Image 1: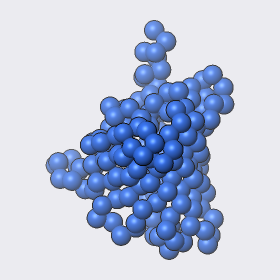
Image 2: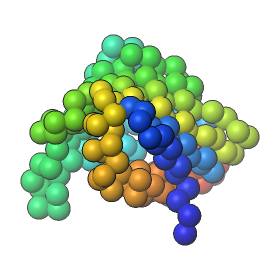
Image 3: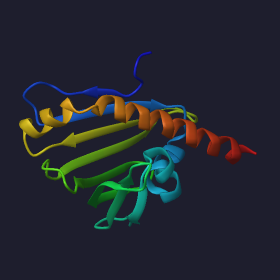
Length: 160
């Protein structure tokens, strides 16, 4: 099965472009990135802090099935335009990858479909390449598939 989330990592560049078309109105896709209850479901993480505004910060914590904390990720919003754009930093504690800058764009394709484009910039080509060695592509695909599935349920309850 072909992955629906496309990850474009050009050799020698310190960035990745991730694109995914969703069968969701753009408002619901955006909601999946800003509502703690929804984020916790599709990202399989705990939202410790989420200030959805310019200069607001966020912090997520991911644990294993036994409840041991695997990692904590955090960052700051630099731009927050509902249903259009989120620009934020992303940094994982306990990882030597440093902070990355993420530009998320939400675009309406039709009343029922939308596109998410993530432009992620890393500190160096080496850091980006190190991340690409991890099961990054599979991970983001699984997360986006789950996002589609969870928000689909919201979509049906939206129309009732």
